[in-house]
Image (tube, rainbow, N blue to C red; front, side, top):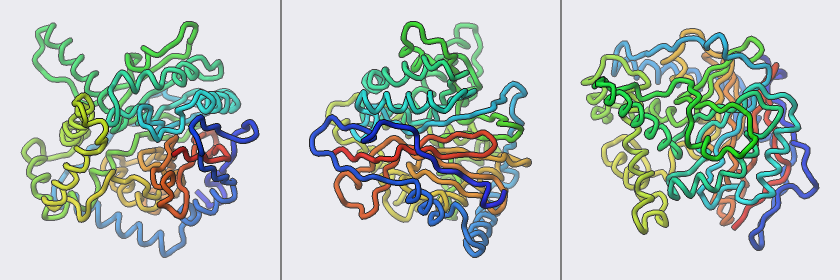
Amino acid sequence: MSDTSCAIVNKFNRPRGGFKAERPAPRVAVQSCTVMQEEHSKNGRSPGGESRRRIAEQARRRIELIASRIPGARALVKAPLPEAVADRLVVVSDTHFGNDYGALGTSDNRKLLVDGLRGLGTIDELVLLGDIFDFWTTTFSDALEQARELVGGLLKLDNVGRVIYIPGNHDHHVVRLYYEEEVMKRLRAGDLEPPELTIPLVADCPALESLRPNGAKVPLFMTYPWHQVSVRGRTALLTHGHLLGFFERSLWRPRGRFLNAFLLKRNPSVGLDDMETFLSPYYEMVAMSTAVPGVVDGRYRFYRTVSRTARLLGFEKEYRVSAFRDTSIEQNAVEIEALLDHFYDEKPAYFIYGHTHRAGMLELPLSGTQAVNCGSWFNNPSDVTGDSDEPRSRYTVVEVTDEPRLHEWGQTIFVP
């Protein structure tokens, strides 16, 4: 794909003044489309030859490193189902309902998002791409209740064909609930074989269905950890993005022998169930900790503990509050290339993800896939406190028709 056929950054039609903040003394920074386009170029949307060569070389080395640790590790996935076809695909991610820094904490802001989606015209698939809820910072019921108005508004849109929910790491507890329910169904039938840890595309999503208002007719589906759809003849692969952490170099260096030994004991290859087995206990530990008095206020206490442990084991060189948070799409390129190599012989046209909270687009040098990051609806704490010289909180939606586009609300509000 040529540079001229890459992303187009647009603003949603919005009332003058953009988002409104109900809290006192908000800090406001107006961002223009020009500023966003310049940042995309700077962060690798159209990287130069040297940058492309560097990404390609690092990706080759990462792929070879993983193959040397676990020969035959690749776990190829099937092509999209024939019925997974869309003329227009729209994606929203990282709303983080339940977190105080969520940008959709006011009714006015939620209405602006719903109205903006209505203005896009017919949407065949509206994908909620993970971290819609933040079960790491509040209880399950509180997070759902805070999302009620937005989810209800989305399910009442008359221009949407269907809504597909793909959980991420902060709302991974939904995946665990589904798994446990499947286990119980099998046990009642006398079947002791455990189900897979992934979720096929199912019309069964109690978490969101419980928020459906009367008269809302948009069909609702759920899948995990990804969804494939053909958009005007080109395959799009959508996943939240937390699985990219599995392809970090630190996990496959010699010091990562604990991880390698764990995987090799189970299977000579590494599939989605292996990744889920490795990651899900940690996600559940963090989510369940919110039920313990005092832990909610500590927010990422368990995340930090595990991160420090990983550093001691040699998996990480430095302590991080949240893996991949605020990293640019160019910084994620090597992991994306490694993931695509691991699961695909025939690469998708688009790889769409969230997780990092940094919107952007980049044509990958090895696969030729167009990587698209959805950004977030989350106020970066460093922007709120003034610790960052360059505000990074932007509210964006991805649209895919003939090509991917990023729609941005033109004004960014930081609420202290």
